Each structure stands twice: as C-alpha cells, then as structure tokens.
Length: 301
Image (cartoon, rainbow, N blue to C red; front, side, top):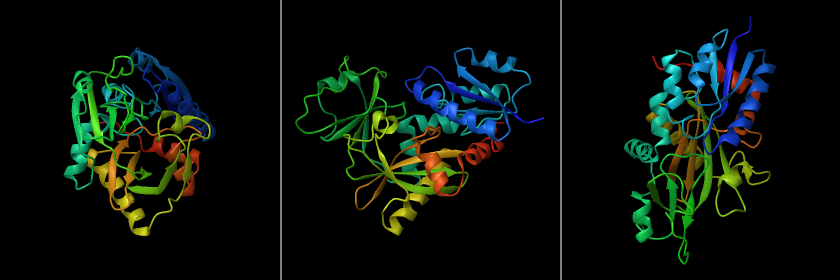
C-alpha cells in the first residue's frame, strides 16, 4: 500500500491564499509520485481532524505559511500525536519566526545582521527610533507582510492604527541598500544563490506572488567568493536555528558584506516560488523535491 500523506494548507494567517496555492501544487506532485494524499484546509480543529483520519497519515506535509503554521504551533500539535512532518521542528520554527531571536542566534554564529530596535506602535507614533532610512516590520510574520521602508522626506507614520494590524511589538531595522539574494538549503547543502529583481520599491508580498512581480536570476551574477559565502552562511544559519528539511535564507549584499535578513522554515511551493526554482537548477524535479521532504519527515522526540 502506498504511503499516506496529509498535506496541510490554508489556515487563517495573513498568508492563507499563498498556502492554498502551495498546498495544491504539493498535493498534485505527491499524487503523481504515487503517494496516497489527503489535502486538508486547516481550521482550528486541526488536531481533532488529524486524529480522526484513517488510516493515520504516515507523514504530514506542512504547506502552511505564516503564524500558527510555521511558528511552532502546528509543529507542537504534530509532536503530541507523533506524526512525522516536513520542515523544521517546534523550537527551530519558533526561533525563525521570532525575528529578534533569530537575529541574536545569527550574530552569535558570526553572521552579519542589520542593527535593529524592538519598540511599540505608541513609541513609533512619537518619532523615529533609528536614523532614516529604516525598515518597519512585524516581529513574527512572513512573506514581507506588514513591511515598510521609511525614507527621508516620508510623512508616513509607522504604527498609525490605520496602517498597522500586526500586534503591539514592532521591529525597526537599519535599511541595508544593495542586492537581494536568497539561498535554499536542503538537508545540509545549499542548492544555489538567486538574485531577486523587482520594479517595486522592494521585494514585498505582491512582488513575491503576483504574476511577473519579480525576476529571478539563477545562479546569481555575483563573484565566486560572494556566491560561496552566501551558501556558507545560509547553511550556518540553518544549523544555528536547528532547522531540518528545507529552509530558505534571505540575504542582502551591499557590495562589500552579506547580511542575513531571515530564514524561512516554510518556504513557498507556488509556481513562482524560489525553492522549487533552485531545486530545478540543481537537477531536482519538483516531484522529487517534495518526495524527499516527505521521506525525511520527522517529529521532535
């Protein structure tokens, strides 16, 4: 009998729509690879639903994005019912999603990160907490949800109730000019370095997921030393957080130094997603990629 895989998608985070696209692509690929697939649009009764599935899934492919799906919550649930799942475990997922915690671990591992301040909406309304330009972002969202660049001359007030709905705590980061790079890590190796180009102000949510919102150069047209260093620190960051399976590191290169922005433990699996693109560059088909992830699924024991 073929192995039974439950694909979790949807959920109720700000990234629900993207997750549904990722989940559909994964379900189709796993079905084509010969797995028995049950696709689940996750609601808040996910635990009860999973325990009622018959036969019990041999593995869960976690295609959820954003809060509750990649911050350790669903991982903890799957640990309790002892079902192996793809991507990182509870602690690594929680650390990666908490941007200040992740940056602390990156810096401790010798990876350059931008200066930042953790503040509140109320404090931001009083004035700048860092010299402009700076970046305002939620402390625990993905896919550039809620990210804004504040430049000289802008009269935008970050933290204004009309434009902020991602909690009381806010991260304000020094803006790092330069080139946008990303590296997928599969197991213990980097697949490639991609440079991301967009006509938008920065690589925001629409640039990530809209048709022709961005252009990807694989491999990135950067010097071999920079390319190798991007791969090295991406694997180092993956290990520093305790990630497993597949992750994706987002970097900035200012012409001299590489800075780690964050590591995504649940990278997208949509038609425009970066990890499948890098896997293809490494001669790994999408079907083989998601099959490898299922075969390497685990829970925190």
